[in-house]
Image (cartoon, rainbow over all chains, first blue to last red):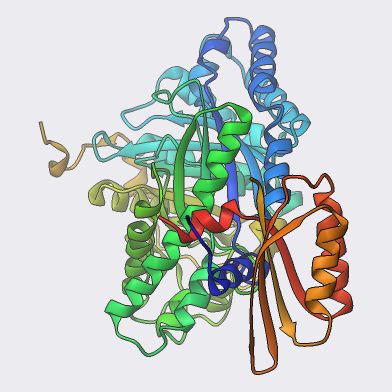
Length: 456
Length: 89
């Protein structure tokens, strides 16, 4: 018989009550392929019917599990099939896209989910005419919806980088910032540019339900920087072997909780369980910071030499411990390094220890990329595209997911502050290198896939 | 059998076990096991209880929380499954 010791019981209890351990998200992926129609109104009806059919009990069940087991489940979300595909037969004008997007937004609010992701297009190999229309409508869509999240996949290690799409994404971000200027340009916080995007990601803003996924699936994102931090206090002054072992063990425990919740929810909702995303996702809450962990490993401040190494080992140990604990691992799995959502990162930016360039280096070894970074509102479209291009190529060459979620906060300049509220936190505006890359981005076209993608 | 784990810790005082088990008794919960230690005047207790017959689990949680507040103790009441998932292969 399995037994629990008093120490283990206290350890678990404290993880929830003091160290912010939570299941960050339960995300239900729903295929919308069978909702496609050549009439916009019929498509909207079909989508509403399908979402209500599968997700009506999602929030209720998640809350029940949370109450019964004492495990906080912070977000309840839905991801849907990339909407550029679903809207292709019927959306010809900007208003058509807005109509569909608003329908999804309203249904999501009716279901009381926190976010719904999948206003997405995958254009790694180039854009169709429909893709271009879809992308051009994104700023308006984001400004007229609240919980709908959008992403564009502009490249992959297999397909190379579509620079035309990168250029367009720079414009989408600038336009979205302007259209949502009265709300700190918050529209940009709901938009991500990806390469090598994963199709089972439960985290926002980049979640979508890939077309190779099944009808419906439940994916879980666990978190717990606070728990890792507490564990590392016991490894103070120890060598790296001990440090790595400590992180691995605690990652195992965190993941087990996520897996338990996922299986229980899947059983109650009668929906297949997909994957656990083993991510250390920080929140603005004190003690729930990835930056704090890096500093506890031995850095005076995040951004100091050693930061990239510390992040790399953290990411790797989280994966090693988590994989052993879970049936199926997927999603982004690693450590997130968003600036606005992590008090330690914010502090490091404010004291000028952490720069955009160091963050870019860190993204080579973290699980995602440049995330929730606010930059001056007057940053040029080409510069934003240049930042995206750099980040995307890091992913393509290193065969990993990278992403950019950047907010050129309208009317703000370096050193100012923007506040998004809730989990999105607040962000100091970071300085950007403004030497021009216009000629570079204006070349357009497609950068071919790298040599190591040719494995056949 | 549906089991719960009740973890109590804080500064030691009289009547902790009495008060906690009374709340359990009042809600038709049978205690299966109690482990406790006292280190440097700090009381740690873990109780495993059979909650299958109780129809008032939310009431138990509230009553334990209230007693915890009154006696400056940290009291957590959770179903056992999450603990087993975390600590067993």
